Length: 355
Ligand code: IPM
Ligand code: MN
Image (cartoon, helix red, strand yellow):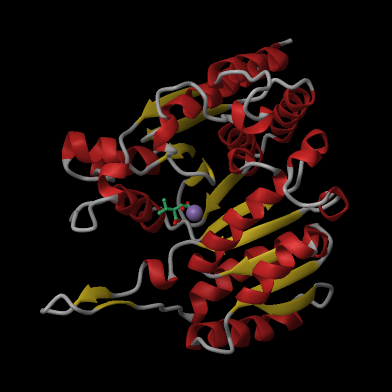
């Protein structure tokens, strides 16, 4: 297959983890005789430094002209500690999501057999957990009207949803549940928020079109609790933008490390594949970051983005083997135990695929 891949490494550990994922993508390209083109583009703080814009028009053009986008991470502490900064790296990520119409972010969570004891939760709670969180990604409080009063003593962010926005992402969630264990949990705060009541009303109307799917509705505070108390009860969850952001960081600890979870953002234009972790600036340049989340995002790029299932499967197999054999970065091995560098983990997984 011929495919155009846009590569947006971004900030912090982004370039290091992307370099490993690219080794894997290139190993697949060679093994299965595909022909890919790779086009790098700027996003985040590096894009601000070079162009003043965290998602330059040139980057958008490259994404639009590509078949898939492989994305690293963005964010830089120099902006985190300066709430007055007018341009922020995160705006680049949000603009990319909006302009590419990426309304659904798919975050699968299931622990790795060989790492079950790394989870802070008891093994019997975690063993067998397997769920997918579908996070709405282009609406809600992230994108609503926001502002500051003239005297600067008041600020506001508004949360807005339309029925159409809710329907398109929930449709995807119903379809995914149909291919899995046929259970959908809608996470909201309908006891307080008008937008959540519209979510409930809209999904209740859709239920009749999916008679084989069991739907339940859960308040987000309760869901946050149940997720770590009974992670196995969940199959597919769907939720609005900010609840999904928070819930999936929480969910990641079930697997033992935030450094393991991939995601796919899909919607109207080119899909983007990115780890759920951030730019981890403390580790940038040290060759210690866990590349597995980005490598598994590459697996999703093949499966969800290009429809190449076998290619995705061998990447997952290689990752499983690396974890089993203890070829892991320090977040997994733990301080004082034998650990491998970011690039060593990447090399090992790429070699496994080649042979
Ligand atoms: C994520 C990140 C982003 C988000 C940040 C970097 C803006 O936390 O992808 O989960 O909040 O969506
Ligand atoms: Mn997040």
